[in-house]
Image 1 (cartoon, one colour):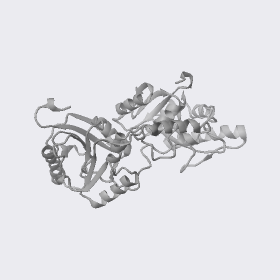
Image 2 (cartoon, rainbow, N blue to C red; image 1 turned 180 degrees about the vertical axis):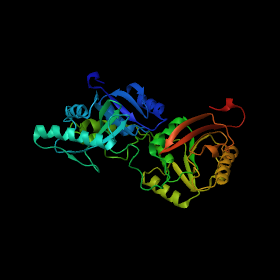
Image 3 (cartoon, rainbow, N blue to C red; image 1 turned 60 degrees about the horizontal axis):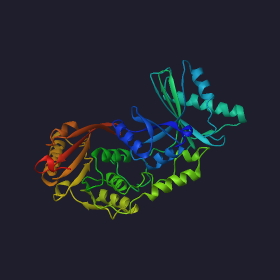
Image 4 (cartoon, rainbow, N blue to C red; image 1 turned 90 degrees about the horizontal axis):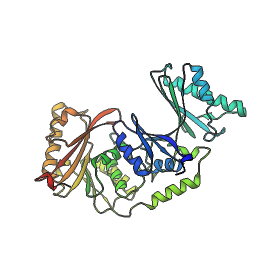
Length: 386
């Protein structure tokens, strides 16, 4: 990389996944990686920023900070934003919107900060060109991110546009479907290296299965997506983007030596899952069946099992506790030689699981604080485990 073209970027993610993102950033070529809260900062150039948007599995957004400043008054904030040079990214004929977040500052609310930022940008362009870019909250060309903490502000460009969990591969999904970035994080934390079968016997519409398949084939996370925020910046380098994408696509593997198994007791869920899998032409490595989890069995084969069971919002306490006890019993009896991951917000029900986790992480599924419990289920001595 040419050092003079390197900048500090911020990769946003879910709380609890910062270390996973740091590992992925390092593997993809980032440097000077620093952990933040729900984010990781790093040094890279434009090519790396393009590559991360296309390839990274555990990142929600990649922000490019343009300015950081301190302020004491609303007038000082306005003046600092007014003097930022947005022209390399925001054309006067383009559209934009502002996303703002504030914490413990002089501002009353996020909306006011967004409006003040918008006014400063539009006034700057009007003074220079007697015209201004238009605001479009629904489908803007450029998204500007404003973060205010106390008397410090960071103004950034959102290079991703839509959140990167929107991979572009879902034809259908049910309401309880897990976020794609979170699913990729669960796989990474499980330490599965695509070196054995993968199982989700509560697969729903198949997010975990598809993320596992894409990981196993080294398929970029954005392979099925065609739109990113940086494409609408005034300095977008189309040839560089084409080269980055082609290089990543050339590294896709043609085959996977094992199988990915998905099952669910709901015929409708499996039908939806099958539509997603077939649309992606992954049905040669993802095998689906309509079965309750009690009917499934790994037949003693080494497997990685990851499940996102119901958390019990619609069940009585004794019903959900018995449900989780049954899952634990099935794993102990039918999934010998397996590494297992279970994510749930129901800590009480997990007390009935009947297995002792080897590791546990705190993650978030939407607004729900969840435990991610990892188990090693083995027959005989631990020395037989890998």
